[in-house]
Length: 300
Image (tube, helix red, strand yellow):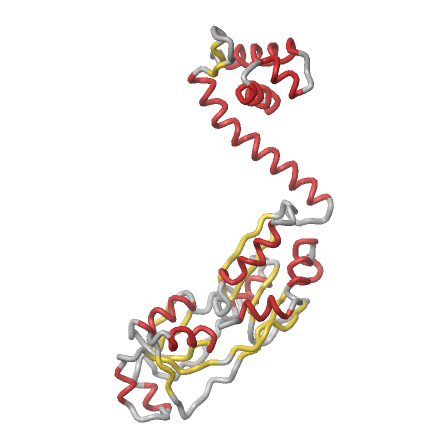
């Protein structure tokens, strides 16, 4: 390859400083070395990079294009250098976090903002999972940390800590036909109306369903946000986490209905593989020990 990062650094410095001499001072080189670097690059690429006719070094059209794209390479190289150094200090190059849709990835953003201010160099990758999907993501290496996992912990050497408890209410839109039925709603009555369900995202572990009745028509959606919207549109009825239903009920978009059957509350946990714990994973686990942060993730 004829183009080097060092050559790009020289061209960038000349453009920012306006002269070969100023660039040499910034780069702690003699002016002749800067001049030679540019001439060598021009010779290798067979293009003229600078118009030297004026008092200020000015990039040609070819030089502008080279520097525009070259600055992306310089930033990428600097970022890579930083991440390599951080990995050597125990920080992961990437941390993958699976967030159950019952929590919602956007609720994690304030904590992620706090993490980025640590300047660790670790890249974060969020995924949204449903029901057994969080455990499946951990078990099959798609995630390093799961937030909001529920149900029995599968075998595999996972560590867990409580996140909180979710309570459920039976919900429908104010205009849905089920509101004409007698309350408390019995199972046979609920069964006649379409349910809205969030599809389990597990790929390998047995998928789970909750709150559905045998023989009931089901409209399956990908996320809890989509489920709430489907309820508001009157596309079905069913159980919603109380913290998600509360604001929609207060706004008059949904109604809580009395039922003869109940859906037990669920225990949510934070889970990870301790054998794979780097500094970034340990940072999140420690911060999630804070009751205020856990409450914010599950707040109404």
